[in-house]
Length: 242
Ligand code: IPE
Ligand code: IPE
Ligand code: MG
Image (cartoon, rainbow, N blue to C red; front, top):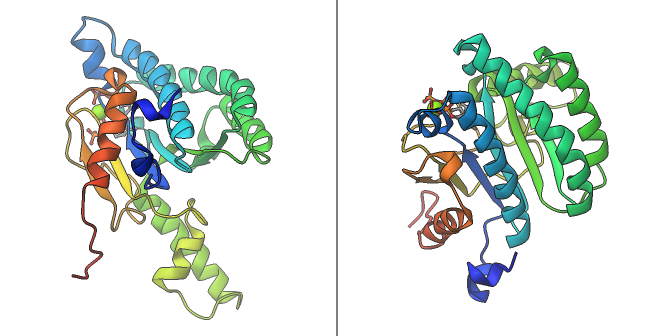
């Protein structure tokens, strides 16, 4: 992909380091075409693959995506199973292409309760990913922001009791999040025209810029992602200052 098709050299110098996406609207995309919701998830997984390659090509360092929330278990079993099956298929394919493109895959969330085949694949992907130095894709899977904060608080309390830290602060609590060591996302994109976080990256998004697209996730193309990033570049971030 030729990145100069989307960005000027000056823009390429100001690329955000970390972009996150709430990939929403798969079900509506399918339903508006008279297709089962699962067809939307299938198309959406293809969009995800392309989006990750785009982020890699334009020099973004971290791309964090919401694939399955702790609340998504409330959906019909058939849909949940179909999503798990698609994740498995995606990982199987990604394992080969990842190495070639130097993309690293990580997982945020409680993966211990996922179907065993998927868990095994996640372990394999993790192991293969270690040496990759290109884009790092963080896949939020059985992920909830509140659950992540509660888990971090418990881990920090343990460290405090063990004398490994002297106090719990806003700074060191970050070290116990799934995202430890990853800078906060500058930009969070949500598709599907919903204006909410739905329990995504609650801790990390304190000063993230938010961009909502009215397109459904499977309709998202490179130019839509570029538009979101350009919108971010045009904003003035103050972080509470003047
Ligand atoms: C997002 O699309 C994907 C997941 C939550 C797994 P949805 O399935 O939420 O699609 P809509 O919002 O119902 O259209
Ligand atoms: C958020 O979308 C979760 C993912 C995209 C994985 P949802 O569709 O689950 O969010 P709500 O229910 O509209 O808030
Ligand atoms: Mg949705």
